[in-house]
Amino acid sequence: MDTLRAAKYPFLEESAAFAESQSADVFSLVFSPSYAPARKRGRGRVLESIRRSEVSYVPLANFAYDRLMEVLSYPYARMLVSCVNDRFLTKRYALAESVRMSGLLEEERASTVISIAKELKVDAVSKDDMLMMHFTDYLRLSSRIKSVEWKLVNSELFNGNVFLSNDKFCRALQNSLQDKIESELPLDVPKDIKEEMANDIKFVEAALIEMKTKFGDPVGGDVAVESFPPCMRTLLIGTQNGLNLPHSGRFALVSFLHTLGMDSEQIMAMFAKSPDFDESKTIYQVKHITGEGSGTEYTPPECSTMKSYGICYEPDDLCNSGRFAHPLTYYRIKTRPYGRDGPKEEKEKE
Image (tube, rainbow, N blue to C red; front, side, top):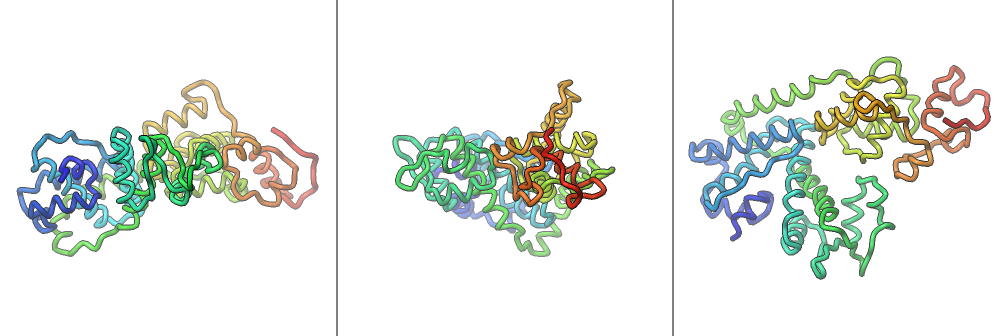
């Protein structure tokens, strides 16, 4: 048994087998002083997911006990998340664990990557150290990644398999693990175990509340959300439902909201709902786009650019009317007193 791999990827079946071989069970994990390091690390996994949206990698010495503690920290973290039972936390924790896995896999041999992919129920093979994923799994895992480079038409296929670079393959697997964890949580945690975990549960709840209350109401002022074009409305709903937006989508939404008069704090509040929210990175990105950090204010992309980026979502009749070529013009038409049913004008452009 490869105990190092079991500790690095604690969601594997061999990780559970390793714990079982050491006579470790849930009761011992929660109540025994011998497993205190696993409980501490498990709480740390959840707190890191809240604060950084990524679980760190702890270098593991060649000792079975250290590796066992790392393996057991994973089910303890899952129980903590289940006891808190908050949708945002569940999604953020799932993302954090999957980001950790993706980063570690990029340093592994192709054979290891393929074996983990198969355990995640992904049909994958390697050929001359090139990684390939069956196109059905590729479509399933890449559908939420809106960048043009991820479209199937821009990929190389061979006998139904998609050739992928190592980093892209691992990024796709990230979505697979994220989906797996989300589908498995919350667990049904017995009452006596919840009571024993009460202090750690309160600690996690406090950290979660602190993050959520740090930012105010995401949409305020005179912004008329109901008048947003479908593309911006879809992007906004995505942030509020905890979905991960492509970089092009974030840029478009931030620049659009800034042009409408929203300040950086209001914009930050919307992105704080996303499971991959990183405060320091988001502050930098928002201030760069709005000109606070760079001195250059960026304007939202026009409709043709939104289409090329794959973020022109569900265009309606007004979008298809040919009256404008920019999301901002859509908004201005909709917010005029006569709205979309008023007198038609010549095609406007920003």
